[in-house]
Image (cartoon, rainbow, N blue to C red; front, top):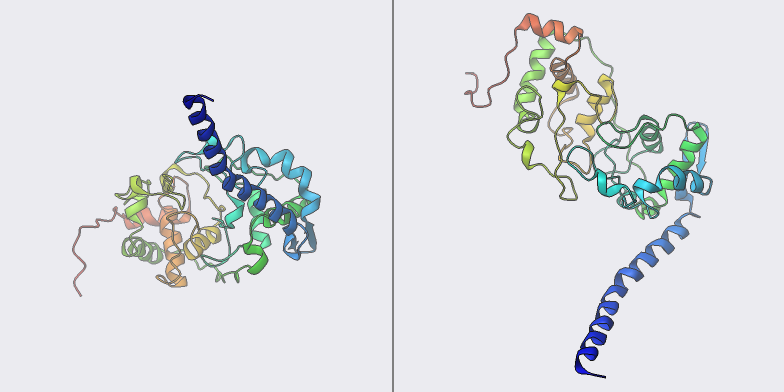
Length: 295
């Protein structure tokens, strides 16, 4: 064997050897996931429904694999085309990190949280609302999603936060909400007018180091995790895990969170009572550089 051929052969052997750990890891991951299919964690409970992971095998492959991948790691065939600041890469179920939850930041979502996300979809993403699925199919898919991560084997979902009754919107609450918006520096990402153009907006990244855009209230789209005032309240108090949007549960009180909800509603291009009250207040955009009011 000549020296050149010998070098090529050795190089091929080395490359093949270096590739073995990745191949073995993939095989181990697939093996583990198959084992987790038969654990109690691979079930779901939504009201009177019980979901079973095995029943979701075909629905997942038909509707979900193209984005989320066979191994649930978010690396389906279409994932490459969605990896932009506007349209997020599909969720990696192996990490069990979810944006939309009713549970505190860092904890697992409830089965109902995932069930709702499947039916609602995620606005500003390529995750559509699968509201044509039967309730049982959605419950089965929740169970299937849970079999992908080891976290479900050892952890329980967090305790859902308590959302107090929504108070009556008033001019005083809207003004107080603007003060909260300024104090906790929402403007740094969302901008002083809520247009998603704050000074930090261009630097934001998700937990995978990918660029991500803050929500633009002025364009009037649906929130990532719902449409109601309670949904918006929940976003403040749980955060959107995997994104730069933190939980403010340690920074603002429940009544202040409602004030913030009412103020943010005034930034949207809809005719609402909050919007009408804001006109009467003649609110101006905050000035982050203004000196604090005298005591």
